[in-house]
Image (tube, rainbow, N blue to C red; front, side, top):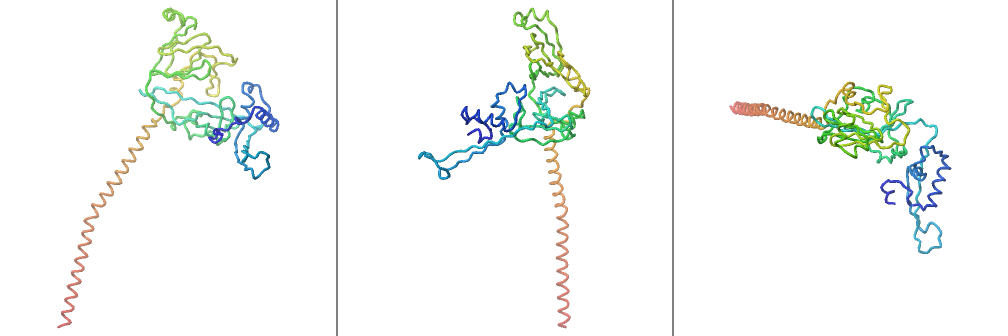
Length: 352
């Protein structure tokens, strides 16, 4: 119940027999069919992922009949499931990862990027998620979402849209990252991405030799030079040893190619060892206009400068209006004096 109140929908409150009845009832009523790639996911988890709402109601004893004198009421939990349509257009969902990189002697990273992005190839409509957990989304094993994000077309309004459309990155913002010699992140299986301030000299070594004698390895095996930003596909049974870290090629059960890169609407690389991402970045895209923190600092400085300018203008106007106020006051006194003298003069003539 605590999870339900936290909006973490679940069926954990059901007994095993009741859970089985609910699962098969939802599958039958929704006419659900399961493909082979669902085989690794328990059926109960699949049905739980279809929950979109749960409602708990307390019914007091006065509203029903019971033979149990100790019973004060019953808690009724109503589950709402969303059954997917079979004929809907598919959206291909991608997980987006950002990695720090070096530029102008600084370590920066893209900011305000969505964590997941989906596209419908039929009409190029897209969806994106920055915090999928808040929308009740499970985008790992099974793509489900309680709340569908806005569906829109690709535009030029965001950084990621400009990346997709291969436009100058005028909308992209970056944040500073603590400096390090290198950054390493695993993408999938034996597929890694690395970032460093310059080219990195590494060795491709059979794993058995790597574990036996380091001195024997460095004289015998193949040298690999990693570009400043590189995609690395470590061959199964080999280890890529670099200064400070090692990447191990583990057995991969999947028959699909370990790396397929689409670039400019065509196949760029397949089953490669190292891909020079840095070269494609520098050749085909402009660098980002400004750092996000620098941009905020510039905005703050501009605001302070404008505030000071307004304050100076107001002070200047006040000092210039002060003599004018004195002048007006002097003319009022002069007018009153002249009027008083004229009044005295008229009174004297009448008396004469």
